Figure 1 (tube, rainbow, N blue to C red):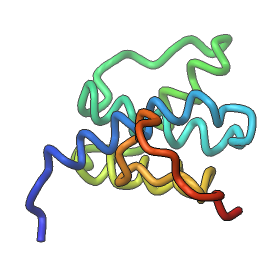
Figure 2: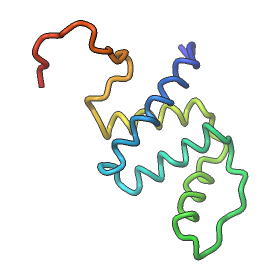
Figure 3: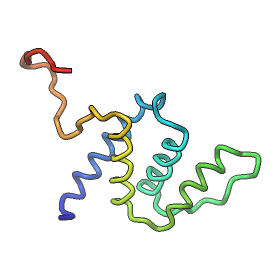
Length: 109
């Protein structure tokens, strides 16, 4: 079922925030992949002119985004979230962060 797209957007925002702590473990390819999908979600289809030949990083980012064509934002979100989960398998966005109210037992793992 494709219901609850607002929940997907929420998940995407959490993944984007979580990624900030994963920059070190992500490969360059993964970061480009994630960048492209982030732009696809936030901006839509690639709508900017290609950066200059000398702007190597900008060109790579642009090409990664351009390569998505007109794929849907929801698909981009799902792929983004999937990569963040791959980078940090222990990350579980479904569980709301407890603000330390009740002391839990010894954490396994």
